[in-house]
Image (tube, rainbow, N blue to C red):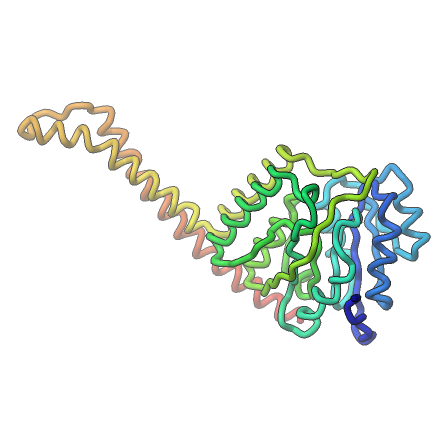
Length: 313
């Protein structure tokens, strides 16, 4: 049974669809989402397409916006910069996300109960998720939930609904598929509310090829996660590094100290280990101090950011 169609025309809704060679599915995606959001404006982002994706999308009533820089991160940055609406839906053009769940995603946002609602993916068959992709998703999810104290189940979903507040508050600097990870971390960092709605995630239709490359994109996601945690959680990052260095310093210092005691406090053996131990302990203290300083700076920047957003509102 289809969800109830949102008929409130007092607020504008933009459906934004990033595409790179999705000629086989884009028409169906537009038609399916228009059936549930008849008053929405549809924007298809042509990201270096070499097929007739743009022509098909145009014939189905979508506005075409070209993004010549190849990469989903560039597309989303252009989305947030160029499209103006009260509420936004972002969905991939490969027909793997269900249009009949779009109102379930939009409802909490339109009611003011969430800034962003993520369509948390549930596999509908064995082809929906590759094993390595699933393992990578779980690793990233657990790391983010542990660091930010959240309880999200899908960090990398490309199916999201959000308010105009998100477009003003959340910067996007990623270039590729790691952008979903950045979006999620930015939302948590700026304390914007994120909810999830479980949605079935289907396999790509016959003839539609995935743009993901398991090892390349997985490495980029992990590197982006590393950099974002270092930037947004410096006390956690440098504090943990400091504890590791301290533990190594203590371990390196045990043999020379024990030798010093065993010789009746007259001989220091294993002098290089003693120097290494002192160096590691000093690095540990420096790492902890750097984490405290960066944490204080981040807090001030966050205060300034919140004041600026309130003024824009």
